[in-house]
Length: 107
Image 1 (tube, one colour):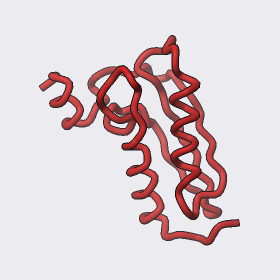
Image 2: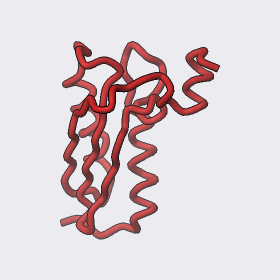
Image 3: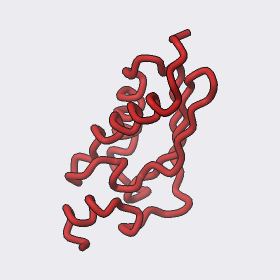
Image 4: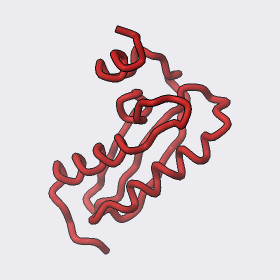
């Protein structure tokens, strides 16, 4: 098992890693798009994420989920990564960060 990391440091590293994951059709990362609904880190540094996609019928859904998992597994101190793909509530542009909205012309 990897060494226990400070929760807030690990959370920050996870968020930074999520900001490196993009849907190839949208020039904004999954975190700022608002696709990450839940991030849990347990006492053993296991990470569980609920994430969604901009559309349930996304043709590269599996690739985005797998790339997200790979990014998180690369973080030193992370043990197990579980990603739950959820569609409730449905994603909408209101879930994006202000930076993403500005970048995509919603502001």
